[in-house]
Length: 362
Image (cartoon, rainbow, N blue to C red; front, side, top):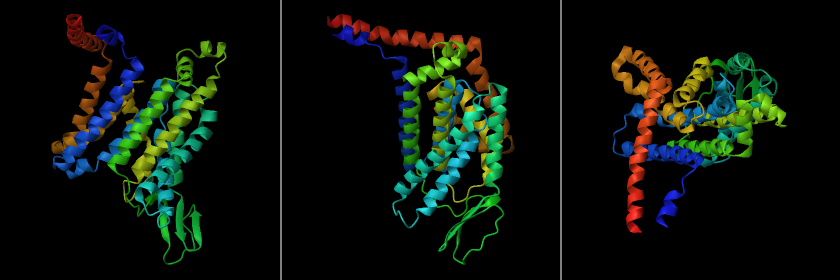
């Protein structure tokens, strides 16, 4: 029986899923204990929710870049759509729904739905393009969304909701301005929590990893590996790529809503080209197609600037050097071969002991 049990090996999917969930749960426990014992500074405490949001963004983008094989540089646009729609939803429910967790959940769901609709509308024409053209169009989408948010004004009073593109609105004295053009969302009630962020991260991992292991996921990867061969066996390439793109947009919108409801004010310029590139860096450094790698890289690279704050003016230089070293270590063939050999050696050493014990028991 011992040999039979040891002979049942876990599938790569199960191993990767277990690693991803384990990293998130271990990180949550460690951060909670450090926070309770006073080991976390106030600046790092403020980074807990953004870390969760960026992990969601990185994992969702990996679904497009790593699994679907398309280069998207406009993920911050979906994050922006989710953030501001989630803020509006939570704000409109204030006084109607008293429980903050319920309003947060509804805000996150709303952000995901609105971003998903935007992803579907954008994806239908955009995914017909390939390579650099797709990257350029998604980049343009992110910039268009940022510029649109700069001219949208939304306010609420006893007469209802007022929307304008130039700020000219006839409002009552007690009107509540929710979106104020270039000033973005103002007076936002901060209802995002670290626990809700971790739950959203686990939900994102569940969705993405189950898609990867499903029939649809295998079809998406088949379209990525060889489009002509996939079409020859009857796969609708456009359908599967649009599925991955839309699901990615939904998750990005949910992460954006979590991010937006963590700040009392939020500027549209926060979701510019630099943010899209930062999310793409998380994916590349974590390993394209590697889900748990995206989790680690997003968490580490979000915290790193705060940890390096002691270096003052040189911290961003050190940050850039770390990025370069990680990139070299991740994709250098010699180091990669050495790392795989070391991992196999460790697995072999660990596997010998249980086998010996099983033989002794018989």
